[in-house]
Image (cartoon, rainbow, N blue to C red; front, side):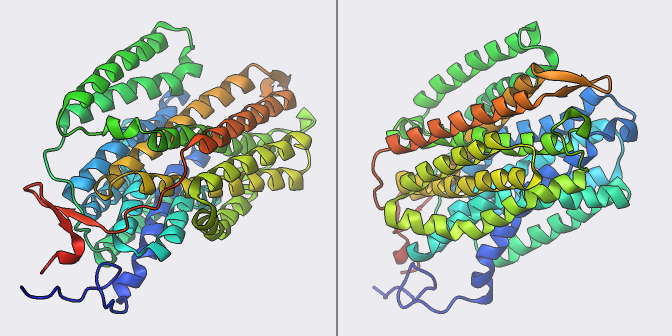
Length: 497
């Protein structure tokens, strides 16, 4: 039998120096993650003016955010599973292409229906981070994997921090369609870069895609998140919201039953039931809740009128600049997160991150009147989020087989999304119930903001407790496996022998 041919990377020995494409894999994937976060954020500065620009109601305009949230939540685990089965680069390229198509549609139209459909297409980009993390596991040696995964996880916060001031500047000085033409160009660049620089991973899962499971999950999540996101507007006790929650419980219960009985499920619930995986998902949900309150509350707090006695009356551009230090911090602290995870284990990093988030909210409670203290508190929360978000995928990578990393990380990102949606609803409920009239308009009181900080800080501590409850870390199997279509498994190093 012939000897295996030398390969690059960690699969074979001797390892050749990485090519230009190999060296660009991490930057290109990180660019895709940042672009995804930017795309989700750019519509925020437009929300106050979109009813006038599109000749529609404020309720209709809110769907430009809701549609992206729903589509992202539904498609992330579905596309993650598709990536495990049919090729991660192929699915990643498709997700970025859908995001870019949505941006082009937004650039070409002012019709609110078209914009909502386009924003739903952009929700497919939520799968970029879990797919990219799975690619990094397949392609990188263990000594480089931790820092790369930490950077990839941080792109969510980095992109959000960059996207808000960028979008605000474009909207303030140019026609609002210009913003979407810019993101269309960046999206097309991202698609081309991924196709050129990222090679297709040979690690695959065999079998047939669980279409019924995908439809059931989509229906259940749509009912759940639609009820959560619209509860404040429709009324939490309204028949529509209660009906959506009831339908979500019924559909997801049937979906759970179906997943346990199918031979090739969309989500391996037996794997999810393991404490190392299940508790990681719980921690992701709680961390998503705690993190998202920071962005929501900070943006509203600094824009509140000075007549409130605490507001600073800042513009949307200045608001974005207040959040920018948090994005820079996430970029700088992602390598530290990787080092802590390597030395102490990712569950300790996750618990530490949750504790730092809680400390950030303590700063916010101590002083939310001075701008520098507001920025300091928001930056501390971002630092803790970096540690926590960087540790979560590492926990998943250590707990699941190589062939299920994209789908498992997709579920983890889904839990973050549910946490963020719940945070948005909870913060809105708190602020709505603590208002006073300023200039004839109801404005949230400082007490309401402080209650939101307390709520988010307590949830962060709960996330830390969940992290410490995760069983001790175990070194992952660093030898990638290739599963053939016939179902046989062999070492990747034997490929081509």
